[in-house]
Length: 600
Image: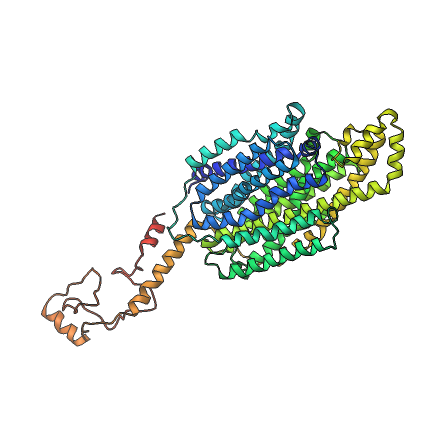
């Protein structure tokens, strides 16, 4: 494909990704306001995020497997429709439970967009050339990630938070039309499709039970209790049954043979930490800005720009360097180091930490995510079989989403526990602050006892200082959870095999594989034929040549017919059975697949 054709094909993918990211990020800064208006708690806040991440993680390998079996373009369009309709429906929510349910449906579409965009990109761009176009993806990510929170804050302050859920609708309609018009991929060979429904159920059960336990343990029930034993035991049992099912299924949801590939296994380990850092930062940094520094939703969007700047600059710059020099491992190692440093430094922040330092910490974390997130998928696609690009790409994305889901759940649970513990320890300070409020003391005491997520910036100064300190401490401790995972990610990246990037797209690799099979099969088939004609000796040939002019046949040699007198089989140039057939001019005989490739 020419550069212009690639750009045209990418336009629909880019707009689809923009729709997905915008619908998610536009809500991030207004989420504290939403939960407050719907009378939700910190647990509700965590589950509004976790529900989307959970269904995204579960659906990602399903979309990836379907991409290897059916039409990828239609699947991508279906994912856009599911995502946007669920997002619009979430705008009508009247309580946290309804919002969580629609966000769960939203995650089903998000999983398709995340998995299929990577698969379709591999269809039209080779791994070596991918960095050339990563600037476009980086720009889209930056606009959606920076513009989304800003737009969400403005909409929330001006018209109300419900309009945040409707803003993606016109972009979604445009994305559907552009994908239909510009994205053209080669049709896949028709074959019988077998979907692993039992695997889907078992995977969903294992992941759901684990996340529900992580979120509710320590609040609704004790960490060490019968409920914990039942939930954890159920999750482990479902996981074991899932593995047994995958070993026997004709079309497994997650082929366990992928883990024989060292690159895939290490990339999965590394992607877990990337997911925790990426999703955890996007969720809890917004809370930090509003609950620990008293920012409005619009201000919170502006204050997270350093992290987005780091993500944009690193993803664009590293992509260009990878395309130019063909080296990827040094940049992945540097990204893992920055990820670890950023997570550790963010675990030291307080409500009064100099914002310049907080900006540097956010920039480092964003740069680490930008250098690792897309490139881990890139190296897996580079080494995976063309027929398994869908499940391999979605496998990395799945574990990144799963890591982010578990990370957000654990960080949210740790934050809720920390806030509750600190408020209990500072009960005397709270009582003193409430007494100083005079007539308003009873009103604020009732609001604090309700358990609803507070609006810290609207509190009186005496209460505001206490709650800012409490939430800043809790959020910083939550970031500390991500540090050991980041260290494991760095170790995994260090052991990744440093294989050079291929210059062929997935479609070209499939065609080349077909051509190789055809080329190899010709000499092997010829070796199995039994000659039925007679071969002349050199003396007999000489006698024939003196008797009449020799004529040469340009057609194929038929093994089931007797050799004619004018078709000489020379014994001094035997036919070789270990190489490709050669034509009269000595060139290798081309199969139809090779002829098509050469014309391209």
